[in-house]
Image: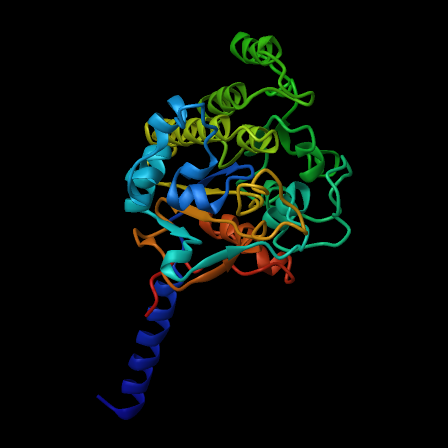
Amino acid sequence: MTTRRRAVVVLAAVAAAVLIGRAQPAAPANVIVITIDGLRWQEFFRGADRAYFERDDRGSGGEPERRFWRDSPEDRRTTLMPFIWNTLARQGQIFGDDTAGSTARLTNGLFFSYPGYNEMFAGLADPRVDSNARIPNPNLTVLEWLNRRPGFEERVAAFGAWDVLPSILNVDRSGLRVGSGWNVTPDPVTERERAINQLATDLPRFWNYGPVDAPVVYAALEHLRTRTPRVLYVMLGEGDEWAHRGRYDLYLDATHRADRFVERIWTTAQSMPEYAGRTSLLVTTDHGRGSTTTDWMNHGREVEAAERTWIALLGPGAPPLGIRPDVHVKTSQVAATIAWLVGEDFTAAVPAAAPPLPLQPSR
């Protein structure tokens, strides 16, 4: 073999190695994104904290303590979120565990919901997004961008009780199908869809903008089964509401239920030929919370540790690497990661957006 031919072979091998290292999931690919609003990294990685239980005159934490307390952090987190730790952590990968020398952080400096969701889906922090007011997002989100891409038209949908969700995704401009508020199924056409909306209005109204998470999940599952979207986003919000009210017991209960909802959505997708083996799952949160018994209910720029988040992935785009050690990531990387998981490059359209998460093993 001549020197020139050897050089060509070597260059081809190097190029192939680079492509393999950056290889995207085989098309057509799908992605399901689920957020658990305000779930602290402390409970996510360590499970329930005994110091937060309300105790009776005998010092007992009652039923919540019996349900969720275990001696080791590993057992506590598995008890709280069995699907995340028995399935996702073993078959996928998780970012943000400080005991592994890793962090996941917000960059917006405000550390509450709308700025967090904007950063997550637009791929960047924006000082113009500085409240939770229902103001249309000036930024292009990855969901809106994908909805315009060939093969994704009308196949991107979002569901969440919070009535700010349509503004975050700027539905008037984006044209995205978004269920929110008391109409968790937008424009229902079947008896089942109408029944889900009726359930949402029949349940007790704990807060004034929309229902608890269950009918949101039912609406998303119905959409998954009947409309087969390529990109599905589900916003879960109960835990954040109970945390703001200082109800650690109900915060844990909502977290446990959220884990069950994540599992139900994932197993439903895996039971369908359109999704089985061709779908990735990304689960994360919009912000953290305070790190002590006196400030855990709150978050915001003045609350220490509220910038800390976590990100979990499962599916063909995320090799089974488990907890990622010594890796530091940002919530702003979620947007480009969502696009990458379905074979698209969001940063080419929005150069200011953060790059995708480092999902491939280091070489």
